[in-house]
Image (cartoon, rainbow, N blue to C red; front, side, top):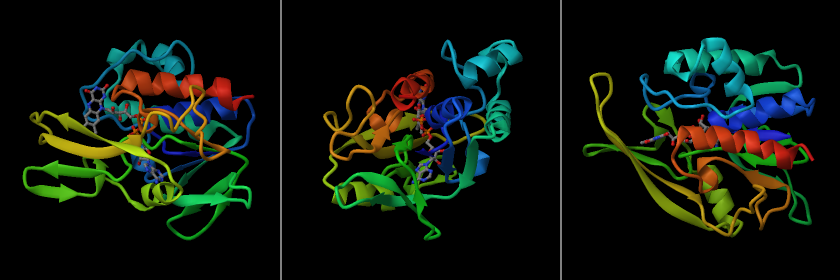
Length: 230
Ligand SMILES: Cc1cc2nc3c(=O)[nH]c(=O)nc-3n(C[C@H](O)[C@H](O)[C@H](O)COP(=O)(O)OP(=O)(O)OC[C@H]3O[C@@H](n4cnc5c(N)ncnc54)[C@H](O)[C@@H]3O)c2cc1C
């Protein structure tokens, strides 16, 4: 199994699969932004089960997390799982067989990675444009670079998207900014996360059309196991 993106949804999916002994490759653009939150002061109630639930009990509740602590704890737990390998890379497209079934991914370095199934958990990073005042960057969150290749590959396969806009107010530590990005249009993803046009491909969290809500993304990752563990 390949999981693309180590936000909250992808981290929950990959960790849950590894606990079930499913050999899993989690590919994410930067190991430094695993389970990154938009700001240091964010706290949210974790799902009832899964990785964050476990960390929450250890930490004495989500209010005890700072963004940096959460990143470190999630990264540690992911790397501890023997069935899981976390790879720093950017997925640029899909590999598929003659029947159109997704069989893996292409990466930015040009190394193909094969799998029976692929789950996209790429959040606000599809065709993402971040704006601070008059400055525009190709980024899905502040200081987190995006790349348009995966979006372009999906679009070339006929996948339809909706455009969304997220804004974050500035504070003492960070400037306010806006991210415009694409999510899969309703009708592209079934209730179980399977993409209807592309067998073997799944999507969970914000990129699947979920709400821009940390708790919802984490929950989506835990719920994904009901589909993927089959
Ligand atoms: C401007 C802004 C405002 C927000 N406001 C709120 C709010 O009000 N309330 C709230 O709860 N949350 C808010 N959020 C948080 C946001 O909603 C969460 O990030 C969201 O829940 C998405 O979680 P996710 O796990 O689906 O994806 P993300 O957390 O976005 O994680 C996606 C991961 O995938 C990786 N990735 C992307 N593309 C690739 C690729 N091609 N190859 C490899 N890796 C890739 C990224 O590097 C990233 O690590 C906001 C975020 C932003 C940017």
